[in-house]
Image (cartoon, rainbow, N blue to C red; front, side, top):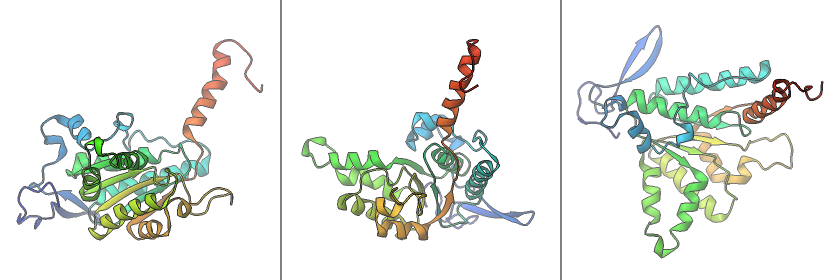
Length: 263
Protein backbone atom coordinates (compact mmCIF):
# COMPACT_ATOMS: atom_id res chain seq x y z
CA UNK A 1 0.00 0.00 0.00
CA UNK A 2 1.40 3.38 -1.00
CA UNK A 3 2.27 6.18 1.42
CA UNK A 4 3.99 3.98 4.03
CA UNK A 5 7.31 5.04 5.43
CA UNK A 6 7.97 1.77 7.25
CA UNK A 7 6.64 -1.35 5.48
CA UNK A 8 7.56 -3.40 8.53
CA UNK A 9 5.80 -1.16 11.07
CA UNK A 10 4.92 -3.29 14.14
CA UNK A 11 1.77 -1.26 14.82
CA UNK A 12 0.01 -1.83 11.49
CA UNK A 13 2.20 -4.61 10.01
CA UNK A 14 2.67 -2.61 6.84
CA UNK A 15 -1.02 -1.95 6.11
CA UNK A 16 -0.92 1.72 7.11
CA UNK A 17 -4.00 1.37 9.33
CA UNK A 18 -4.77 0.31 12.88
CA UNK A 19 -8.15 -1.30 13.57
CA UNK A 20 -9.99 0.12 16.58
CA UNK A 21 -13.39 -0.64 18.08
CA UNK A 22 -15.63 1.85 19.87
CA UNK A 23 -19.21 1.32 20.97
CA UNK A 24 -19.44 -1.97 19.12
CA UNK A 25 -18.34 -0.34 15.84
CA UNK A 26 -15.07 -1.14 14.09
CA UNK A 27 -13.10 1.61 12.38
CA UNK A 28 -9.72 1.90 10.69
CA UNK A 29 -7.55 4.85 11.66
CA UNK A 30 -4.23 5.80 10.03
CA UNK A 31 -1.16 4.36 11.68
CA UNK A 32 1.43 6.95 12.84
CA UNK A 33 3.77 5.54 10.17
CA UNK A 34 1.43 6.79 7.47
CA UNK A 35 1.67 10.50 6.61
CA UNK A 36 -1.80 12.07 6.62
CA UNK A 37 -2.50 14.67 3.95
CA UNK A 38 -2.99 17.47 6.47
CA UNK A 39 0.66 17.38 7.42
CA UNK A 40 2.21 17.32 3.99
CA UNK A 41 4.18 20.19 2.50
CA UNK A 42 2.12 22.46 0.28
CA UNK A 43 -1.10 22.23 2.27
CA UNK A 44 -4.49 20.87 1.32
CA UNK A 45 -4.65 22.58 -2.08
CA UNK A 46 -1.40 20.99 -3.21
CA UNK A 47 -2.68 17.58 -2.19
CA UNK A 48 -5.98 18.13 -4.05
CA UNK A 49 -3.94 19.18 -7.08
CA UNK A 50 -2.01 15.92 -6.89
CA UNK A 51 -5.31 14.03 -6.81
CA UNK A 52 -6.45 16.03 -9.88
CA UNK A 53 -9.73 17.06 -8.30
CA UNK A 54 -11.20 19.79 -10.57
CA UNK A 55 -11.67 23.28 -9.06
CA UNK A 56 -15.46 22.97 -9.31
CA UNK A 57 -15.44 20.06 -6.85
CA UNK A 58 -12.71 21.21 -4.45
CA UNK A 59 -15.20 22.14 -1.72
CA UNK A 60 -17.39 19.03 -1.98
CA UNK A 61 -17.70 17.53 1.49
CA UNK A 62 -20.26 15.49 3.40
CA UNK A 63 -21.15 18.52 5.52
CA UNK A 64 -22.31 20.62 2.54
CA UNK A 65 -24.18 17.87 0.71
CA UNK A 66 -27.80 19.07 0.74
CA UNK A 67 -30.87 16.79 0.55
CA UNK A 68 -33.86 18.36 -1.20
CA UNK A 69 -37.22 17.50 -2.74
CA UNK A 70 -40.09 15.46 -1.34
CA UNK A 71 -39.80 12.95 1.47
CA UNK A 72 -38.81 10.04 -0.80
CA UNK A 73 -36.10 12.07 -2.52
CA UNK A 74 -34.68 13.36 0.75
CA UNK A 75 -34.59 9.82 2.11
CA UNK A 76 -32.76 8.56 -0.98
CA UNK A 77 -30.19 11.38 -0.80
CA UNK A 78 -29.68 10.96 2.96
CA UNK A 79 -29.24 7.21 2.55
CA UNK A 80 -26.66 7.73 -0.19
CA UNK A 81 -24.74 10.17 1.99
CA UNK A 82 -24.81 7.77 4.94
CA UNK A 83 -23.48 4.84 2.91
CA UNK A 84 -20.67 6.90 1.39
CA UNK A 85 -19.70 8.40 4.76
CA UNK A 86 -19.63 4.99 6.43
CA UNK A 87 -17.46 3.67 3.61
CA UNK A 88 -14.95 6.51 4.11
CA UNK A 89 -14.88 5.95 7.87
CA UNK A 90 -14.40 2.18 7.61
CA UNK A 91 -11.89 2.15 4.76
CA UNK A 92 -9.88 -0.07 4.21
CA UNK A 93 -11.89 -2.68 6.14
CA UNK A 94 -14.25 -2.93 3.17
CA UNK A 95 -12.46 -4.29 0.11
CA UNK A 96 -15.14 -3.23 -2.35
CA UNK A 97 -15.55 0.26 -3.78
CA UNK A 98 -18.66 2.33 -4.49
CA UNK A 99 -20.78 2.92 -7.57
CA UNK A 100 -23.13 5.89 -7.40
CA UNK A 101 -25.89 5.53 -9.96
CA UNK A 102 -28.68 7.99 -10.78
CA UNK A 103 -29.86 10.70 -13.17
CA UNK A 104 -27.78 13.84 -13.81
CA UNK A 105 -27.76 16.56 -11.17
CA UNK A 106 -28.49 14.49 -8.05
CA UNK A 107 -25.07 14.96 -6.43
CA UNK A 108 -23.29 11.75 -7.40
CA UNK A 109 -19.98 13.46 -8.13
CA UNK A 110 -20.34 15.58 -4.98
CA UNK A 111 -20.65 12.47 -2.82
CA UNK A 112 -17.90 10.63 -4.69
CA UNK A 113 -15.48 13.55 -4.26
CA UNK A 114 -16.50 13.96 -0.61
CA UNK A 115 -15.61 10.28 -0.08
CA UNK A 116 -12.29 10.61 -1.88
CA UNK A 117 -11.50 13.86 -0.06
CA UNK A 118 -12.17 12.25 3.32
CA UNK A 119 -9.80 9.41 2.47
CA UNK A 120 -7.16 11.89 1.30
CA UNK A 121 -7.42 14.29 4.22
CA UNK A 122 -8.10 11.99 7.15
CA UNK A 123 -6.40 8.74 6.19
CA UNK A 124 -3.49 9.80 4.00
CA UNK A 125 -4.72 7.67 1.10
CA UNK A 126 -3.31 8.32 -2.35
CA UNK A 127 -6.28 9.10 -4.59
CA UNK A 128 -7.03 10.23 -8.12
CA UNK A 129 -10.03 11.89 -9.79
CA UNK A 130 -10.50 10.69 -13.37
CA UNK A 131 -13.09 12.02 -15.81
CA UNK A 132 -13.67 8.97 -17.99
CA UNK A 133 -14.56 10.90 -21.13
CA UNK A 134 -11.51 13.14 -20.79
CA UNK A 135 -9.24 10.12 -20.22
CA UNK A 136 -10.53 8.34 -23.33
CA UNK A 137 -10.10 11.52 -25.38
CA UNK A 138 -6.48 11.83 -24.21
CA UNK A 139 -5.83 8.15 -24.95
CA UNK A 140 -7.10 8.65 -28.48
CA UNK A 141 -4.73 11.59 -28.74
CA UNK A 142 -1.76 9.29 -28.17
CA UNK A 143 -2.47 7.73 -31.56
CA UNK A 144 -0.87 10.89 -32.95
CA UNK A 145 2.88 10.36 -32.72
CA UNK A 146 3.38 14.11 -32.31
CA UNK A 147 1.43 14.21 -29.02
CA UNK A 148 4.49 13.38 -26.92
CA UNK A 149 2.42 11.15 -24.59
CA UNK A 150 2.08 7.39 -24.57
CA UNK A 151 -0.89 5.29 -23.58
CA UNK A 152 1.15 3.98 -20.65
CA UNK A 153 1.84 7.53 -19.41
CA UNK A 154 -1.89 8.22 -19.16
CA UNK A 155 -3.08 4.85 -17.89
CA UNK A 156 -0.43 4.09 -15.28
CA UNK A 157 -1.80 6.43 -12.57
CA UNK A 158 -5.37 5.20 -13.19
CA UNK A 159 -4.26 1.59 -12.87
CA UNK A 160 -1.96 1.89 -9.86
CA UNK A 161 -3.27 4.66 -7.57
CA UNK A 162 -4.70 3.31 -4.32
CA UNK A 163 -8.19 4.81 -4.75
CA UNK A 164 -9.46 6.10 -8.11
CA UNK A 165 -12.72 7.95 -8.81
CA UNK A 166 -14.02 7.17 -12.31
CA UNK A 167 -16.49 9.98 -12.98
CA UNK A 168 -19.27 9.74 -15.58
CA UNK A 169 -18.74 6.12 -16.57
CA UNK A 170 -20.80 5.28 -19.65
CA UNK A 171 -20.77 8.86 -20.92
CA UNK A 172 -18.55 8.29 -23.97
CA UNK A 173 -20.23 6.69 -26.98
CA UNK A 174 -19.71 2.90 -26.81
CA UNK A 175 -17.38 1.21 -29.28
CA UNK A 176 -15.19 -1.93 -29.20
CA UNK A 177 -12.15 0.23 -28.37
CA UNK A 178 -13.94 2.05 -25.54
CA UNK A 179 -15.21 -1.24 -24.08
CA UNK A 180 -11.77 -2.84 -24.32
CA UNK A 181 -10.08 0.15 -22.65
CA UNK A 182 -12.60 0.29 -19.81
CA UNK A 183 -12.32 -3.48 -19.34
CA UNK A 184 -8.54 -3.16 -19.02
CA UNK A 185 -8.82 -0.42 -16.38
CA UNK A 186 -11.52 -2.10 -14.32
CA UNK A 187 -10.05 -5.61 -14.54
CA UNK A 188 -6.57 -4.42 -13.57
CA UNK A 189 -7.87 -2.60 -10.51
CA UNK A 190 -10.06 -5.59 -9.64
CA UNK A 191 -7.16 -8.04 -9.89
CA UNK A 192 -4.90 -5.80 -7.79
CA UNK A 193 -7.70 -5.28 -5.20
CA UNK A 194 -7.57 -1.49 -5.48
CA UNK A 195 -10.64 0.44 -4.43
CA UNK A 196 -12.60 2.17 -7.18
CA UNK A 197 -15.36 4.78 -6.83
CA UNK A 198 -17.64 5.14 -9.86
CA UNK A 199 -20.37 7.59 -10.86
CA UNK A 200 -22.74 7.00 -13.76
CA UNK A 201 -25.93 8.52 -15.17
CA UNK A 202 -27.02 5.18 -16.62
CA UNK A 203 -29.17 2.67 -14.76
CA UNK A 204 -29.44 -1.11 -14.88
CA UNK A 205 -33.21 -0.79 -15.28
CA UNK A 206 -34.18 2.61 -16.72
CA UNK A 207 -37.81 3.70 -16.52
CA UNK A 208 -38.18 3.77 -20.30
CA UNK A 209 -37.08 0.95 -22.65
CA UNK A 210 -35.86 3.66 -25.05
CA UNK A 211 -33.17 4.76 -22.56
CA UNK A 212 -29.87 2.85 -22.81
CA UNK A 213 -28.88 0.75 -19.81
CA UNK A 214 -25.46 0.86 -18.17
CA UNK A 215 -24.83 -2.52 -19.76
CA UNK A 216 -25.50 -0.99 -23.18
CA UNK A 217 -22.97 1.79 -22.52
CA UNK A 218 -20.04 -0.16 -21.03
CA UNK A 219 -20.51 -3.79 -22.12
CA UNK A 220 -21.08 -7.01 -20.16
CA UNK A 221 -17.48 -7.57 -19.00
CA UNK A 222 -17.13 -4.19 -17.31
CA UNK A 223 -20.62 -4.30 -15.80
CA UNK A 224 -20.03 -7.79 -14.40
CA UNK A 225 -16.75 -6.74 -12.78
CA UNK A 226 -18.35 -3.65 -11.24
CA UNK A 227 -21.05 -5.82 -9.65
CA UNK A 228 -18.29 -7.69 -7.84
CA UNK A 229 -16.03 -4.80 -6.91
CA UNK A 230 -18.47 -2.02 -5.94
CA UNK A 231 -21.38 -1.46 -3.59
CA UNK A 232 -24.24 0.09 -5.52
CA UNK A 233 -25.70 3.40 -4.29
CA UNK A 234 -28.84 4.17 -6.29
CA UNK A 235 -29.94 7.81 -5.95
CA UNK A 236 -33.54 8.56 -6.90
CA UNK A 237 -34.14 12.29 -7.03
CA UNK A 238 -34.67 15.16 -9.45
CA UNK A 239 -31.96 17.25 -11.07
CA UNK A 240 -30.80 19.66 -8.36
CA UNK A 241 -29.42 22.19 -10.85
CA UNK A 242 -32.68 22.24 -12.78
CA UNK A 243 -34.70 22.63 -9.57
CA UNK A 244 -32.55 25.55 -8.39
CA UNK A 245 -32.76 27.30 -11.76
CA UNK A 246 -36.53 26.84 -11.84
CA UNK A 247 -36.86 28.20 -8.30
CA UNK A 248 -34.74 31.24 -9.23
CA UNK A 249 -36.87 31.79 -12.34
CA UNK A 250 -40.06 31.83 -10.28
CA UNK A 251 -38.60 34.12 -7.64
CA UNK A 252 -37.28 36.70 -10.11
CA UNK A 253 -40.69 38.23 -11.03
CA UNK A 254 -41.50 38.63 -7.33
CA UNK A 255 -38.31 40.57 -6.74
CA UNK A 256 -39.13 42.79 -9.71
CA UNK A 257 -42.67 43.43 -8.47
CA UNK A 258 -44.21 41.42 -11.31
CA UNK A 259 -46.83 38.68 -11.01
CA UNK A 260 -45.43 35.20 -10.39
CA UNK A 261 -45.50 32.87 -13.36
CA UNK A 262 -48.44 30.50 -13.11
CA UNK A 263 -50.08 32.49 -10.35
